[in-house]
Figure (spheres, rainbow, N blue to C red):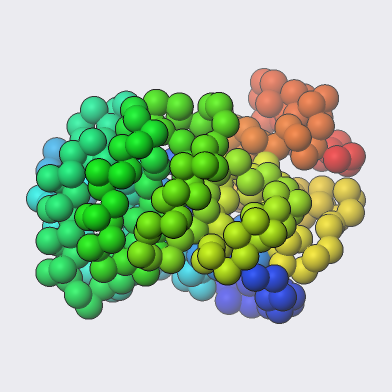
Length: 326
């Protein structure tokens, strides 16, 4: 756990239009990463958790730990669930309610076949009847606040059109749209024409998600949409440059030395955390390497390759310590 006084208290006051929300990425944005990102970088309005799901009819134990309130203190966390219909959703909602959560995000955007072939994530967009079941569960939990994260479709860019009436009927605080279809995963261009069409007919506030890697890209969205967007949700862009949200809010870009220092501080805090909970250096190293997976554009290919290819903990920590130029 992290002490209250560790949390950054000198973040700049929000001056820009959009609030930045941290998108969930399985295997990356777990509880320790979220807490430490807030301490060392911040600038994020909410951190959505990787999806909580059922395994053999019960909530997966790994997901239980990630959303436990004691592991998310002082972080504005929104738990996300993934379900293939009303039955699974009821179990997940009841579990999160038992932990005291009153705000839940519903995943209708996961593109990975392991989930979509079971009707979860983007698979819901091909099954309007299953979406209708989600509406019923939401209406039976009127004390909760729901949002939905979705794509344009499973395998058809127009699939959202057959779902929009159901989306509009949902009691939602917002919808986050990633304008790709699931079969693209994260490849190819985002479809801004389809996003514009969705934005024009969605009755809920809309957040944009997809391929945001710089302050300039957020500014372009501001210039294009203004108040028509509620905000933006960023995943891989924040993993690549953890300072992105703070830099957008403050209007000041960190110097290379400042950024490297903060990255090292966050990394070293993660190292201490994993040393406490993971036995053995080999397993700790495997977990730590994922911290750098998306950072090649930020730290440079040469430094990135040295860190990723380090074969043991001693060499790995030496490569991290040598990191000095972005």
